[in-house]
Length: 257
Image (cartoon, rainbow, N blue to C red; front, side, top):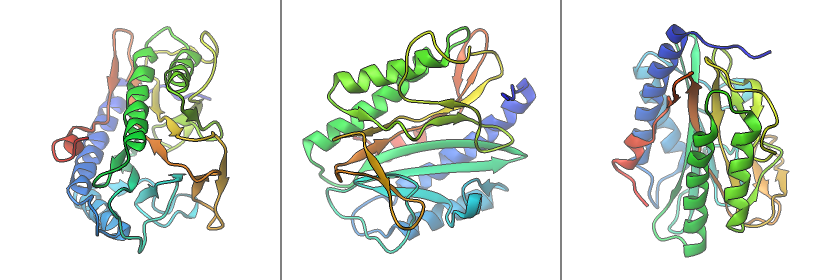
């Protein structure tokens, strides 16, 4: 069942998303070689708590951290820990905020220092595919229009889309209906109606689309161990517009590639 949101509920998600965007910005200031991923997690957790909100991920089905931190071939759901970033890494940072009863969710993948040209191109294409998908996320379209546009953009550039992991609705719950795949056919799926709030999140691989789960029960990586990128926004559908509720502007004020 899809839970459509009122304007008042979407306003709360905007407020949640603002806290989230600023938390991402604080973390971005510290993304560099030599930093341990656990230190990035601590920054996000403290910022969110200091702004009267909670981390959506921490404790979710037993997940131990505020951030999902996935480095290089890890796609999503990686743990922060003792790993120390090094020049040439890429790091996906996914975070959610729970505020006044509602969740927001967004992700960004960073190059650390000098990365290879082909990896940097992957990051740029994945980020661009997110906005290609958002362009199709408008009232009266169908979810398949969003999914197909992301898939075409990515595959036309020689990359592959992870199929087992998808975007999602969100609101009072972190994961709600409908699922938002990053592949599909135009004209298929749920019709986009006013009040729908969804997280669109392309997960794109440099090599094959095949993935495996590590023994920790959470971390998902590419089977061929080639790099993977992940970008995400929470968006709301209105009759006259689509609004991107989350923001990467605080990241990009301090971190550009």
